[in-house]
Amino acid sequence: MTTIAMILAGGEGTRLTVLSEKRAKPAVPFAGKFRIIDFTLSNCVNSGIFTVAVLTQYRPHSLNEHIGIGKPWDLDRARGGVRILQPFQGRGGQIWYGGTADAIYQNLNYIREQRADTVVILSGDHIYKMDYRPMLQFHHERGADLTIALMPVPLEETHRFGIMAVDEEDRITAFYEKPKNRDKGNLASMGIYVFNADTLERRLSEGNEQSPRTDFGNHVIPAMLAAGDNIVAYRFNDYWVDVGTVDSYWATNLELVQTKPELDLYSEKWPIHTRSEERPPVKSGPQAQISQSMVSNGCVVRGKVINSVLSPGVYVSPGAVVEESIIMNDTWIGPGARVQKAVVDKGVVIGDGAQIGIGDPAVPNERMPDKLFAGITVIGKNTTIPDGARIGCNVLINSDRGNGDFPADGQVKDGMTI
Image (cartoon, rainbow, N blue to C red; front, top):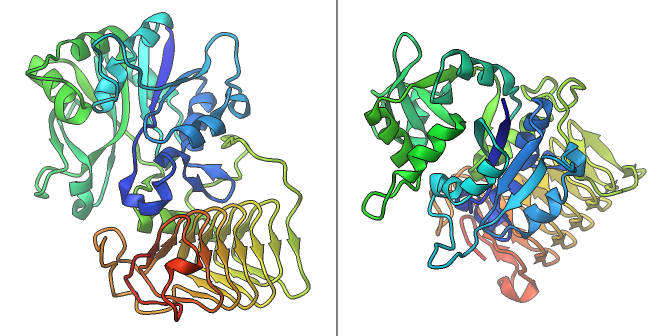
């Protein structure tokens, strides 16, 4: 049996606001030194899958640079290895992927070239550890056309997922895409599919202009159910998180600094691989205080860091305080500055004495009340925060902002957008 993995990594991730403005969601930094896609790539190689295609589309440059030839994941191979697949235009053909299924359909030639018997389709934007081998074995033992990984979610969150109805033999009998009502059960699709290659090609090729099959949840799975295909559920009860919102991204990062986090990044049995720049060790000054935090290589800490995650190259000046925050690569935090409950992207300069995230967390963002409402302030890449500025809660500051973009008095009220 030849098994290959196809990782869908082209999503915009609009719920992450400015964090995915200049990069695809799977390329967003996570847990200091990693990117979100590192978890899916590592799952593949740890599961013995060494033929991996990454399907990109939206702002792929950062993702392409990160993956490269796949060396950190042992995917720089003459046979198999990693391949980056981007949309292309054939004669009279479509340029952009129309959805998850269409992305696979446009790359069926790659599957044929690999002479694959089994195709594992994965999302590149979830945080989890999973050995795919038991699921593959289950798929073959059940003689399934399609196996879908499911896990229980709280009923109040079922509207965020595709929900499956399952019979007593774990056959999937119905599919409900993000149901508004809570009476459809709580078994949610994890976006992990195991297909027989011939079934996948046949079902994707059945679509037409009048009835296109562009999405697995909305089109392909319902069509397979209607056709009577053997679709079975593989139940997963371990750690899995969709970090697609600012609050879940912030909370999932900060869970890692707890004494016993659910996600163990330090297991030698299941390592998470990544492309990592050469950086010197962490350096702390005489006034430094670091408490319950993750601090990456290349950081210099001369102030206080409390319950936070610092990516490589962050500089915390004397007298500065960073608390309950995610600070990405090469950000500079000036003397006496305070950063509280914030997500700060790469290359940001926070001026002397600036106050970030100080205000009323109950005031949602004026432009994105559905995305910024949990008291978290987000600052985009390469922005400079003026000296002495006071930035409230649920504030969104876009990338590349400078002194001239801020009010003259430096006051940015709760819920504002710059």
